[in-house]
Length: 326
Ligand code: HEC
Ligand SMILES: [Cu+2]
Image 1 (cartoon, rainbow, N blue to C red):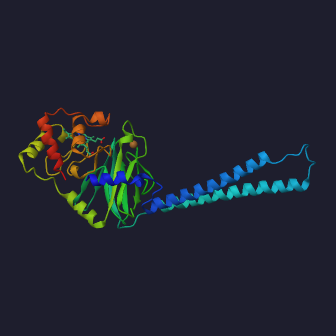
Image 2: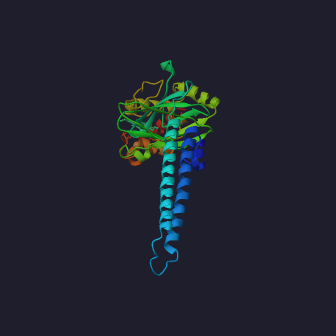
Image 3: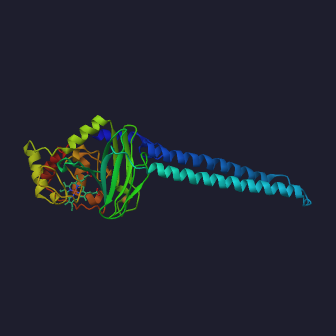
């Protein structure tokens, strides 16, 4: 799955409000472009007037008061005030209408996703009328291209804010309050989103990826996510599962199909299918996984996962097991 990560790294626009990939982001970009262009014109006009005033030839003595000239000047000033008012009023109207367009109610066939903010990672859940078909993952949202995605935003601790700049504006996740937004990705790609509200020590390491894929490959992904974890097939991975279930890991993490069912930390049922670990902090490689498990505090000081002292053989078995969780 590091192909996903490669895509992010090779696509410099994967984290930019000026590279819109969906209808809302395009509205925001249009608003920005019009304000930017207007500001450039106003700046040039003001600078030109300033330079003209500074450098125009002066007469040696004060000219005699000239009522016609005074009237002309008054008219110029009134026109400038009038134009300024019109420009500001146009900004106000386009701002309000852009805001309304961005927050319009999503259609009935929108995909529903629940995103819960935790210090400092994102829980992502796809619900279904049948609870057995619910999918829980972390730090990665998969969506089909061209379909609306309605996101319900929750928080279990402090205020976070969900912001995928290529797709839409930001919206807060507030404890005890449900917020929502929707977006749509018009082209396949991997877009980076992040927490946009300071939420403590590791706020900067609270990113997530939005993977927009064709409807077919999204459907395949969702079906696969509904599977429980594979039963270990060899002695190494069985040992790894034993290590996982017999140490502290199982007190905080879930792996569907095993007795581990806690939701303190990210669901690990399909960990190996994710591109990054620790909310976009590190690429999901064996070395990074080992470093994280042994001492998460070195990588993300303050993260809600304690260091783990594991026998090297046990660690190797644990890593082999975690890598089977596709
Ligand atoms: C006290 C609870 C706790 C314990 C015990 C714990 N973890 Fe974690 N774990 C967390 C939390 C919370 C996170 C999310 C940290 C973050 O990204 O800020 C996490 C993140 C992870 C991640 C990264 C997941 C992802 O998708 O980003 C892995 C892998 C992981 N833990 C494996 C383990 C293993 C293996 C053990 C046992 C050796 C373990 N954890 C023990 C709470 C715990
Ligand atoms: Cu934050």
